[in-house]
Amino acid sequence: MSIDKNTVKHISKLARISLDDEKIDSLSKDLSSIIKFIEKLNELKTDETKPLTSIINSSLKLRKDEIKDGKIRDQILKNSPEKNDEFFVVPKVIE
Amino acid sequence: MSNLSNFSLTDLVKGIKKKDFTSLEITKTFVNNSENSTKLNTYITKCFDEAIIYAKNFDKKKDYKGLLPGIPIAVKDLFCTKNVKTTAGSKILHNFIPTYESTVTKKLWSEGAFLLGKLNCDEFAMGSSNETSFFGNVTNPFGDKLVPGGSSGGSASALASSLTPVTVGTDTGGSIRQPASFTGTVGLKPTYGRCSRWGIVAFASSLDQAGPMTKTVEDCALLLQAIAGYDPKDSTSVDIKVDNYNSNLTDKVKDLKIGIPKEYRVENMPSEIDELWKKGMDYLKDAGAIIKNISLPHTMYALPAYYIVAPAEASSNLARYDGVKYGHRSKGSNLIEMYENTRSEGFGDEVKRRILIGTYVLSSGYYDAYYLKAQKVRQLIKNDFDKAFKDVDAILTPSTPSAAFKMGDKKDDPVSMYLNDVFTVPVNLAGLPAISVPSGYDKNKLPLGLQLIGKPFDEQTILNLSLAIQKRANFKRNIKVWWK
Image: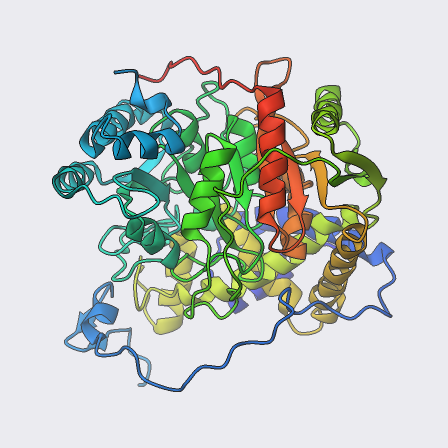
């Protein structure tokens, strides 16, 4: 299946990446060739195969539910591009 | 004193313990080499002044308790380092200064090593030539305009040109082994779960592993020992004993069974690679191992499956870069526009391609056709290996289908770039350990590597077999210094 320009526009919206027309053109070409490449998998019959969801056989370890860290608000805010005291600042969301 | 930059890690550690030289002398050597390496473009961030201070303090204390006493190490810029900029080779993280340290680097420092700098890599580790970094291409010391491989290209280039004694990289589809092969160095991807992923900038979480990149197999065993182990902060790291890889290392590999998968003889592979592979079999036979032909029938489906699984996980992992909490932010008249502009300006072309592929294969109506299908194929690939390992102890293949190529050669054709990883990707999908060991040269005098694939958590066997190959191949890294 090829990825046409409208599909590129749709998925770029989902992925929150703005694209100009020239980029949409070149991505439509690139993504189509990648999709064509991965569609080789359709040669394989997999009706009887279970999907592999984890490579590790053992189940996840349980741990005690206890606080071991915290009080790192300033560290978390340190790299913020825009902040106001203890808050991240974003463009206005609610009118 | 002979030039310390040619010493292996093992000899540096020995020498420093015997007081043949000081940490400051070692550090000055590698700092000096690094300062004269601008043309290679391996460093994103240099910590040379801090390293010199650390070395001076080390020499005052002479604390030899760890495995890596007084050793300066530059690492891939995908490991978060406390108070040192960590970019993942991306504009979107160009100003990010972590307030914490990754577990793997923390382990290095707790063994007595210290940070020399942060090394260039493909953006978010997505690439096979180090041409996708926001901070520019890295050059292979084996030739001007030659790629070092990727994504750990800066690490491989810095190691081969003796800018750092050893380094650590990450491997999601071959990103340690392919650049090691292209630069005549040793690179090991441990079993999934062997090393902690905590504090490593995430690409594809079910495939990513950190691993050692070194000049010799002995160094590789030593460095793996330093970084391996369970970490409560990474729920996918596995709590089983870490072997003493270094002291257990032996080239006595008599009677080990080595599988040769016929599917790894691919079309258009240069005859030199086939010959190298045969030589590898001869080396191991000479060491007493038994060569057996095996089949891994789903090999050809590994790359297509990988290019569904990895982008799908990447599109999810990279959703966090929204210009709010850290990193680059662009202007926008509302929140959504700010997100869209930030991600458009912050990510490079290859990262955009993979995020969009990932978004597409996970989008409504396509999940079963692509992602679920890829997970099923991943199971088939794992079954191939499980079956093979009932009969053999390890598998020998070439590391790459070609030697290092020229910059720009494959840049405009994503699929031809992806084909570089045809021999390395199946291992990541199956979660297995694998190592690339330098074994010879092609007709253009470019290095070639052989790959050994092991059973889960049996890094020791592939290290031992690599040592047997190292001793017989007698590979010399013939690099003329042209970049100073």
